[in-house]
Length: 418
Image 1 (cartoon, rainbow, N blue to C red):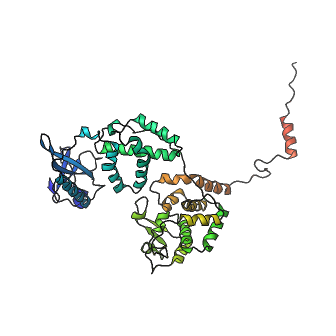
Image 2: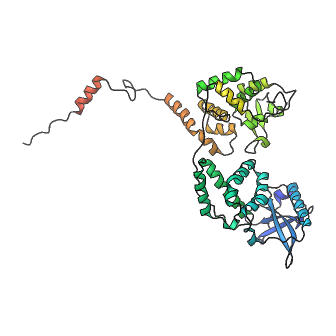
Image 3: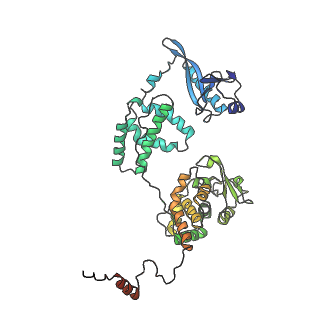
């Protein structure tokens, strides 16, 4: 069916006619572009480009999967289809690769031509994946065909990574990336199944909670209020007062700050979870912003006075300030944990921590469960009942109590038989 594809049509009229298993809705703008809909409710309508390819026995119709309607908007799908059509026009006699032959390509070809472009589009931390693949995965599996990679080989690769003294988390990152690549190969019909599905990971909890104690925090705040590098000190005070991520604070703009309402709006583009959120500004956060005070001069709140642009890195300055405060292990990201500690110590809940820190998954906030339990324990102790004439728990009993206990403990003589 050829229709005018609009957001409204996609939102409400992508249905499968009664008695049919699937339906195709073809675009009127880009010839060959269509949306496939299938009857199962769980199926997500998917964009395809339908075109003719040259085979040895003649022309045949081929379908190129572009992505689901959740992954591509109408303009994005049309642009992608147009680029593909232009590419095919330059090589009209190129033979399409049969499905059974797709699994014969090497992992490196799959990575370069398919996986990496996809990750660049959909994953912010794709540079980390590129590093993991280039340094260790490519030398081991780069020349292997997709269909030849076995579960045993990957488990042996796990053992090899352990021998290189990588942390358990780093070892798992390599295996997860391999598993993800094979998942994509299955999704894109290069493979029929993923041999790494359900592979065991180490899953060692390597989370650091290197926050400062009250005395260290007091000294750090004192240093931040007195050091000559005011711009960076204000950034760190702002991090301690909001629990924001460093990247979020460095990118903060005056247009996103409402001092009258005491709210800072973080746009989705700057958020790790890709969801915008509002952060309440407490008194210390406002003071840090007030001292930054370059609203008329710069676009960003915490601008580098020499360039007028956002700071790129402030880690070295933080280490210097940390040393002045007598702290050795605290990281700059620990400012975020420090904020969560103080929220919980003041009686806040894990749900409050989740909302304030912008955790998309509540399980991420569970790392603070121990701190939350401590706050509950302190609250429970306040309601403890006092027992008259009772020695404190764990204290040694007095002499009279010992004598009384001794008398009570004496065993009476057993009477003789008559």
